[in-house]
Image (cartoon, rainbow, N blue to C red):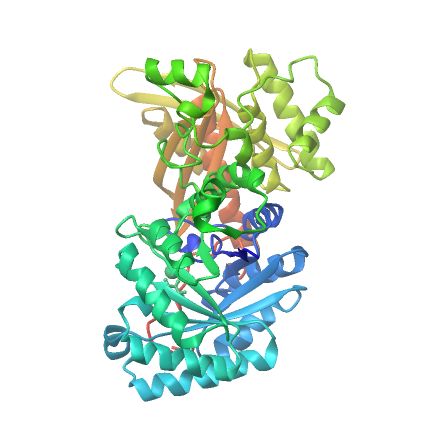
Length: 525
Ligand code: KIV
Ligand code: ZN
């Protein structure tokens, strides 16, 4: 029988460590629920000891996810592991993932520990994790640059202490496929089937997917990966690329998986929208151009026989083309039916908001396409009560780059209008919005993308705003890109407000990961 590959998704842990990405608890839960629909085997939900926000995020996911495994990361010490257990304990299927570095360079310079000390720590940490949960994963950080005999000894210790999965990270993305394959085979020969072998490949040389696939062919059964390949530095192996390679080249890999590949496109869109990490157009599988044919010869070939130039069908990953099913005469019922067919079930308040947005869009845009509706729904997935709500924007753009913006905002029952002057309309909008605040946040990143083609396309703006050293992201959607900009900025401000409201202690911002960057094994330092 064909071996089943275990998909261990680390979008919410390693992916969330991507530079500039900071998701709040609601956003993490929305992504986790989508990963549950995608039916990954495990969701690595975060690194609970890293910050209060990380802890709250993992706990909320453990409480929300019922059908797939939930895992938390912990360094190889008791305090991290206990904290991780507290965060994941509500999950019906839970796993602790503990790690320590095993390469000479990490042990000598970062850990300042000898091989003997590392071995002892592995036994202690894995045994402690095993006393709390049955399912324990042990990772040897920087495994690929470790001495193979020592690494095998470390893994044998981890097995003896109760580890059920052994993870072999190429932490710095240094391996090439052929040597990584040999490396995995050597470990597989040494430990046999006493534990599941897993790989975790980084993409510094653009080889993360190739290395992961080579690992599968040499005995690895678990793959650690992220949606859209996001992650530290150049990112991790991309889930959708590995999944579609296994799917499209079944006869080469001869393995199975439990993923619902029809959920791939929705997962990619959600992660890109909420993280603000836009997908490059030529990205394999989920890029905007992945299924487009520009050259006449290719178009002609595809029209005659699709398989001349297409090895996968867009429908297989959940792209339905840009169909038009709804319009200004569609009512609530049709709208609900339509989004439920896509697998979105919004709570009543968010559904009504989405429907209002849809109606408003019908007044300004001729053809409402699938992608338009998907963006409206994504905007509501993490919705809820917010302090500031955008009402209206008026702009006067004069010469010499001077603009004046008047922004109308409602706060509960109160509706208030403030004006601001700036160098260009975006600057003026931000000045106007900042005048509602008694602090002075700064715009640190601004990105705009069009949702569909055509002059009446909606513009989706992503911003990153910094306040007191923390980064908050915001998202805004409108046919008017300046309105999108105002909405995105207000979205980020609402996250700052939420953070302040709860005393800056809990969710709302998870990017003060003071402990993650700390190299030593003392979680108290
Ligand atoms: O890249 C890495 O080594 C990691 C480990 C913590 C698994 O992310
Ligand atoms: Zn990693």
